[in-house]
Image (cartoon, rainbow, N blue to C red; front, top):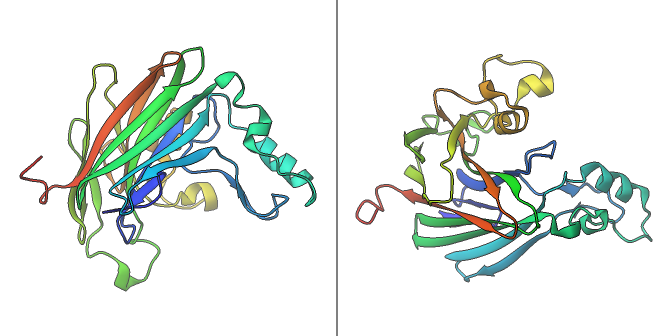
Length: 275
């Protein structure tokens, strides 16, 4: 496994990926990726409208640390698009700080740290800090998925068998891939951290939502959005298997406090003597 940015890690061919999804209880969209404007939407071309920072890393990326600031109020998607589209090239860009969404420190600091214990053994620490003076709820979903090589690419790139993610034990995901081998994602436990719920779906495009075709009982890559935000329990696979999975934590964080979640993503055979 090799690391990418602090937002996502993956192996060199992006066969297996890991990232963190968030929801503050107010946004209309599960925060699975950074939000940005396309060229026609922004007055100075493509532009990411987020507050994120790369804090530390070794030259080999055996360790890295990143910070993301997530508002506790509803994310101002429409305001950012409308105001930047209205402005001309001679005007300054309209940034997320200009919206006032971070006023009174009503936001979370989400810190992600990754440290290699071996070539294919990654220790992960996610810390959510509430910077406001009121208790706040946060849904945090460490998510793993296999790049879809079974639906969209040439035959010679496909795996002989479809990869799979299943529930190996409580708080532990089993990940199997023909060329990568057998990995486990284990979550640590802490007295003040609730146990997560394991969610499973397929890393397939929701053709029913986009094109109005496909099986009604199929599971799609946007299932966690429907499950968390819209409460659609049938959006995720009750058989607890798929090609995309998440450990769903619901954290109630007191004012000026933080909660930390620890995970480990490792190749089972390589780590059999130390795990």
